[in-house]
Image (cartoon, rainbow, N blue to C red; front, side):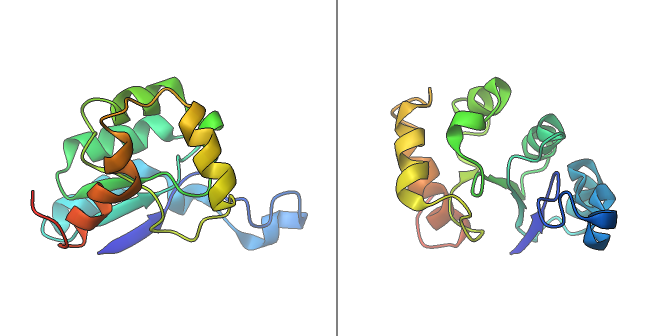
Length: 139
């Protein structure tokens, strides 16, 4: 499994030259090509990749080996589209916790409870999808 950080880079934000961090390498659409070249390699796109969240979702929907990790952003900031996809077409491909959580777990879980995720997808996001990806669960 390979994890790619996607979206705006918080490291270096506001610093001269962004401390050399360049977000062009974290645009999710580029990772669609990686998924094509390595179709048997599980790929995780880490973080709702603002401002390219919809690209994240499109790549995950189109490529069976690509998954979406919601760590490092509070659910209260997730886009309506990301939540809709998590509740429907990506409901078995949404993960929590594969990347080091930057939002305290208790805070994240409290915000997750308030977010409009369907009750039947909550266990998948919190545990089951990750276990399935890691080969620890059936299905």
